[in-house]
Image 1: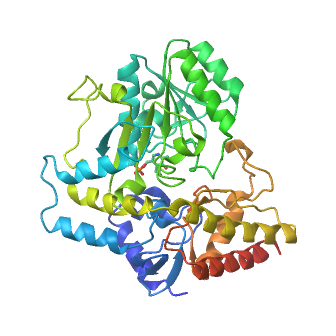
Image 2: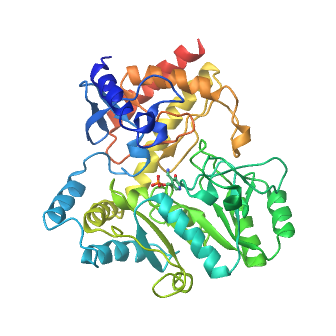
Image 3: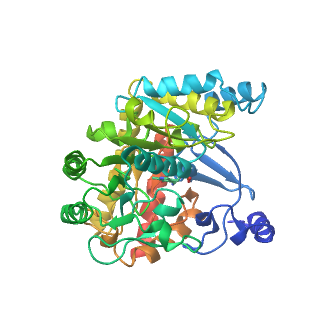
Length: 429
Ligand code: PMP
């Protein structure tokens, strides 16, 4: 496969950006080789600058639930952008996106738009602290909440260790109130809430953890967290930047029917443009500025162009049968590969929920980051390279999940499944 143009562009990019990229995973560090520069996308197909085509399962890490360059999204953006890009004042597009979301989502009453998932999580944490008057936050190993200083924390050893920062530039003082616990471990939670009784503002998690592989939790565990929060006066914060509008319009809250106190959104509600949001009950959100004392602002927040992309996209998601069809398609795709791997005796499964899937080099259900087999990284690296050479594009890290969009046709899914099966043969032979 020709890669000359991508290589040339990456050489230039390395003289412009740290590591040649504007977000680290794009640099192909964990899979080796040089990143591919894309020229265009339509539906499930991506085209690179060398003219190669790929069936895409990265889908920009989740926002593109309708696939690339969906006609309705593009049209709505074009219509709006011709009237101006940003006014720094309220617009009807903000009302329309918020109204479409709130009137179809039973778990939230008020929303505030921001520009990224990171901003959404950061603002939600500030709100949790401001609302409760408490400082400590419980987060879980394997859950990512963007590059928010206080949440960039590695798990320490022991059950209820306070965090130590996992990035240079994040002072230990900033993470001293972050408690990192293993997922799917009730004792660890009970121990922490006992040890820090009355000091914890929120338990924060991705209810469908999808940033360290796909670590699907049981409903019973999520309900346990809800019950602990109720008992201890702690807010339950679901980071639904990936799961929101993905496993159903009401995200994981609706999927498991668990009422969180705060939700962060991103990705899908922006249709591929920069948008995030945080939302909660009217009571909790009334603490946000200018109504309440918790300050949060943004020059480009709710800008009409991004809102228009989101409006067009989520209206499509509301069509009857949208999520059922997407989930069925994804299940068929994953199950076909899984059955093949099982027949051949490979240590490989494809955990999936809604239209999110993961390539797991294990036959066991993996529910916590420490249960991921050591050799997974190496296996993924080889599989990723084979698949790219054969026109299947996955995010360049074994910890990233894949996404199926509405635009993926049965033919495209069958072709991709066949390439994945062949790649598994090569890997395990
Ligand atoms: N939370 C979760 C669960 C995410 O998956 C991500 C990004 N993948 C973020 C927060 C941060 O979002 P962004 O990259 O838009 O800042």
